[in-house]
Image (cartoon, rainbow, N blue to C red; front, side):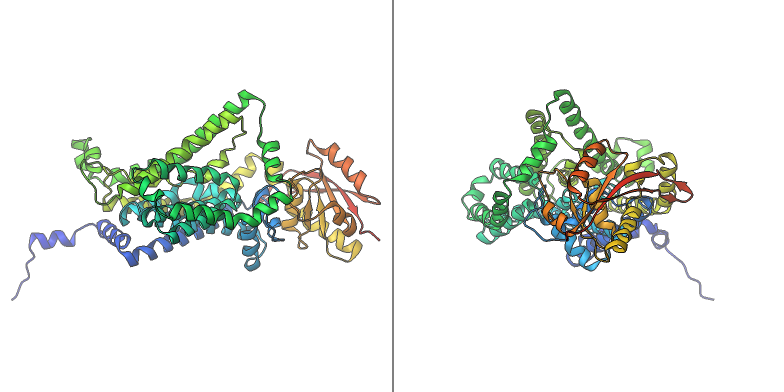
Length: 540
């Protein structure tokens, strides 16, 4: 009777851990030129979808952030600028809501579409600096960076820079390598696109310029047509916006000086250190999780006998063919400059440093770390990092409804967070239509009041902010008086007397109403907020 026998080697092969097979498959996909692209795109889509669902749950008890409503309002009228900022954020929002409904979930989908696109572009940057396995490791690190998930919930010009600044860096690396006129043209257009997002990008443009000057191969680049074509291209591409700036008497600069200028030195120092601490804390998470993945890739019994194996296995001396040192130098220089420059500038010029300004400046940090030649990234480390991302994302998705309910139960009177402005917008739309049988065209009030009305009212009235020198240009006082408007004053706002005085001075024949709105979420009541409403009829 025949019998079968198995060699010890064959037996061990059958018992090989499935995790290592999955790790080998993931590393093979990441390293393949064709499969790698689809792996990154699929990962970015999965990340965007998962975190859109998470944000919808987390923010279910809240209206959209004021910045999001403001970007939506800008997108209702395509202009060359919107008072505070260049136009690109408004244009993108306007195009997005041509295809998606005006709903809370669509704003979170827009934010995650931006971060997902940023992940793919950062992968393209990484491919010019490191090998494909490391490039995918960088992408997963970025997906764990809070800016690319829960901190990226509000779409605004700061978040949009996660697309335009990576495009700028990608164009620079391409131009630095190719040194052709065409590459310079792409660099100039990328710089113009970034400038149309927010003037803050001048920090990155300056860092790229310094990187080109400090790099050992600077003369090869400077003697080529690339940098000079780029300069011409960016000037030509931004001419329409520069003309708009002149026409509006440079109001964005007035806005920046009025809002972010400080005279209190102690407050300035406190804000700068807060900016530094906030951004270091955010970066600590992906760095710590990447370190954990590297540690998990070691065999535990080896670490138990020799703890130093963690260092010796993950770090090694000698050359590394997986790192392009020339381009890595560019990344290290750029990241160092944008990390150190803004805080120093904030101290020197007494600037009100917002922590959100760091959103766009540290997307190169994971690449700067992974591009260290002595770092070795094993297949299992890549797998474990991806597994950590998946476990965290799924865990937060499951917990998100409970987190939202818990937050409201703990802080039920947060007027800024839980005030029911969406309900007020719908009620005021009905008030206007009942009285005048026409579309509500203009809302007057502070930015915190006007923009949410624009977003949530089915009529999407244009916002007008009284006394604002940097008007968005979406409407005017003359147009508001001609079409009629609804003015709103928040009774919990310290600016209430100023608001009421303006409404009475400019609201001829206004009907005054007192309204109260309150939100309820899973049985938890939000704050009951009173509103003073002034209904000004259209001019006869």
